[in-house]
Image (tube, rainbow, N blue to C red):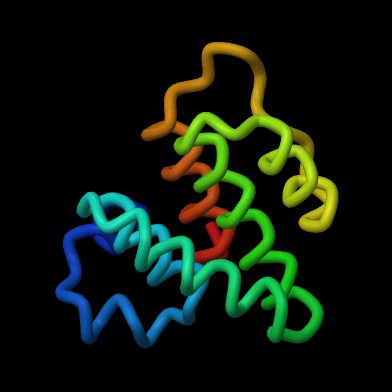
Length: 103
């Protein structure tokens, strides 16, 4: 599934892809607070790759928020590098979704 197809899903269908992706779906619709709660939950309570996915989304959300220090902490927990300066949020959201969707 492409990121575009994923972001076009309704909430129930998006939720079937896990909390990290649902968090991205929520943020794409302007619900940062819900996205943050989902990402933090899976990042703190998930196992293995699921937890790292939550940490990656959590990092992205703090970058969107403008909290680069906190974002850096979560990128490190996700074992990911922060995107380059000037990377658009939409581009990073799509990149994360593509990776988590397996493509």
